[in-house]
Length: 457
Ligand SMILES: Cc1cc2nc3c(=O)[nH]c(=O)nc-3n(C[C@H](O)[C@H](O)[C@H](O)COP(=O)(O)OP(=O)(O)OC[C@H]3O[C@@H](n4cnc5c(N)ncnc54)[C@H](O)[C@@H]3O)c2cc1C
Image 1 (cartoon, rainbow, N blue to C red):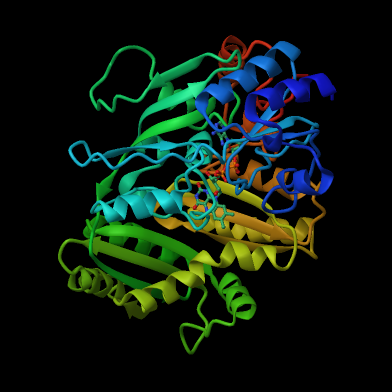
Image 2: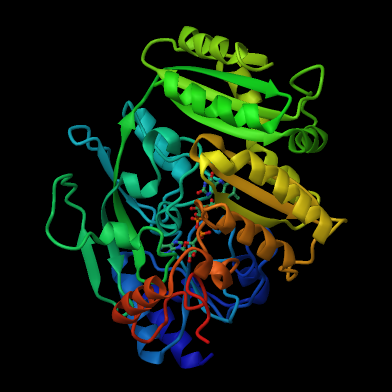
């Protein structure tokens, strides 16, 4: 890369914010899982929307490709420079305005972490509806770019449902900003919806106006254990239909729980192992313990279920750890292939059994771990024991998902990992429309050019 270009970028953001030393940029060039590893001539760290605009103007003129990066917790290889792109780190866009109590909204910079946003909302007596285990590192910009969903999506929806307005910079450096926060605003195309889930291919998100939700002081968590996957999934649907205060319903299996307890040293939650576990949390203004107990009683009439309940924060957190520490435990034994998928409720249980069988017959040495957001039909199929570039299992599982009428990406996006399989879910006409939108907003194709859309043949 052209020293001249780096010099121009340094003039915009300051020399200290153009990182080029190999050991410094290395961390920006590998994803959270370690599966996707590339290289970059430079990491550029703008400190304002104006600086983002100036950086893009320079890169657009020179037709130099840029990969935006927030917290780098993405799981589909979408935020790392796999083809030698410049990394545009948005971490310094960390302004967080005061919470607007009248409108129950807040304006946040792209680099604000979800954890920090949640703390600010809580201090104002509200909450942010998107929560995920990567909360302390994942950013507002990254969660918008991936349309992250997470643990509370069954109640509050995904990031798109929180996004009232957005400020973003287009490839040519023009700034589009619509942060007024009006909930009723039908003045043309809804750019927040378009940019949400666009994985940095259409624009760089610099700020967002986000809706906040009521904070519930009273919470109770129950871990339910079942002797088969089907009843655990049926229980998620049943609890959802009778318990309006349901905040989360998370599935995991015996193999995953065993790994979590081995890796973390946590004690097993029940004296006997079970096949499948469902972690449910209810939250309300008044203590929801009795309502949750009634829902569990109904379940016990139709299935054998063992139950552990926690109301105080420390015990609730201990039960959550069995679910939330899956990702970390799996990564500790190898580099996983992560396949985040969604299926219709009627096919979920069959899919779990078939997925495990198919991986076993294709790669007998590999291990399959399945967990996820049960009430939304969103499962994370993780496979360890495969070479990073061995796509046979990815291909089989994604085709199985499509066969069952599911989506090959429930919440993590397409990234690099799944771009070759987009046509399983999207028709040629849809992909042509995607390419037309991309070409209109980014004619030189500088914004994250190697993700989401299949490589042009
Ligand atoms: C332990 C763990 C648990 C997780 N749990 C969940 C979960 O429950 N639900 C879920 O949805 N995800 C989950 N994830 C995945 C990940 O946290 C999300 O995808 C998150 O939205 C990524 O945010 P980030 O700031 O780290 O983005 P990055 O990883 O930095 O980037 C992700 C994508 O967004 C683009 N991007 C980043 N910032 C911008 C910007 N400002 N403008 C334009 N494009 C941008 C990048 O180019 C890339 O394509 C989890 C990850 C981990 C490690």
